Length: 382
Image (cartoon, rainbow, N blue to C red; front, side, top):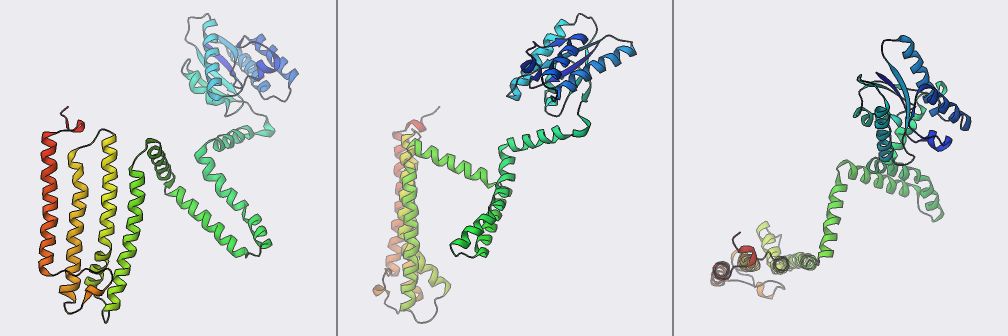
């Protein structure tokens, strides 16, 4: 059996004529088409209903198999609800057909929007063909409108197309406003071009996901009360101070020494001036991380090694850089008077190396013993 199925996805037939759907049978569909044409002659669904009647007459005249025609409608609004309503009405139509033959369908629509329901119909009855009815003077107009509507409804596509277009359209108003305030139009064009270029790179490299993930992570950190948020900010400030202090130490050493500093002296001066601040930043951030792990019941004794390791490394670097400056690179120069420099002799260097080594080893042993004797919840065997 062949079923000619007229689809009205937005339910113009039911809303405008008050008829109950689905409509099954040639005379009923023709009557519904006349009623809809009487109420709204410009509605494209009128053509769909009349095309269904025409297809029914054409197929019936050929003979060979039984033919039936029906009209099904969806709902005005959500496409998901409309598709679901069409599926339910198709089930009703199929249940009303008293035939033992396999039913196949020819679907008649008035555009691309109604054809979005084809997967729903195909899940219930095989589709032999689809006929789209359009007014000859408006060929593909509805399909173009529906395509543009779908593109603009997609947030990602909408942002990609409309934002650059909006920036371009704002160029002229910006130039006019800039002229009122005495700002050159070339400046405005340059800034606008820079913004458009940055946006294009931003979208092209997919950085919006990185930014979204970073914002989400920051929001979660704020709401969760993470101590690391504060300690990281403090550590960043200490790193900045350390960098400035390293540069000032380099300048002080350069003023005390005649001639250009060799690369080794530059590195030693910067490290000597900055390492203590960098160590403070490392200790601060590691203590914040340890605190969060404890509050989240994931604390392990070994985590406490981090601040001691940072302190040990800082002691070693501070002593080595001071030794290089005062006893290796410039042994005859009194760097004790130079601001930010602490001279180290060979004996002082040896002591500092021993202290740094003992600090790391003793912390490791201490927390290993504590872990074995007083295991935390995170260290308990599963």
